[in-house]
Image (cartoon, rainbow, N blue to C red; front, side, top):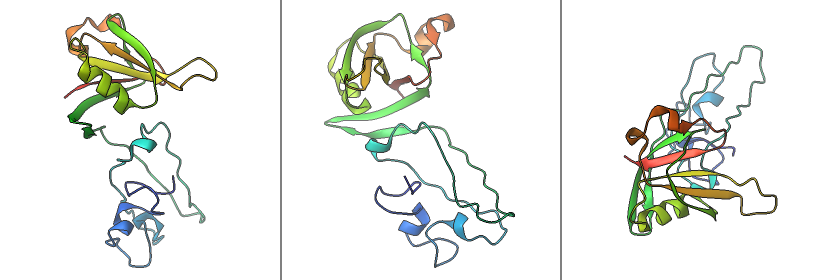
Length: 166
């Protein structure tokens, strides 16, 4: 992606898309290069670009340029068919020991829809499949929430994402 917090397909930041950057001839505040710390912020809300798993910054053409990046707390909202999704998200984490069902999927939204339809589902894990040539994602529906289980049941697993209603 060559944008941040702006609509997919726009080559710039949210201030550029809304035409409110600190200088009129730039599409990102951080491109002004006036030796002043600037801020570019926004939401990544295109499902095809989520989850964010890596952040790479560029444009440090001059010796005096520096960059500092943070990703704030994750806020997952949106609509999946007729169900409003408001989720707490934990990256590199899975709830284990309470799986109702496991299946292959193409998106976390599809996984959320399966959880919504299953009467016992309270949360779900979303992770990459280990099978070569398979659908790239695995959805595990859980019948417990993280706060309902002992701490030793949950696991830090690289690439796994845990979702539960907020």
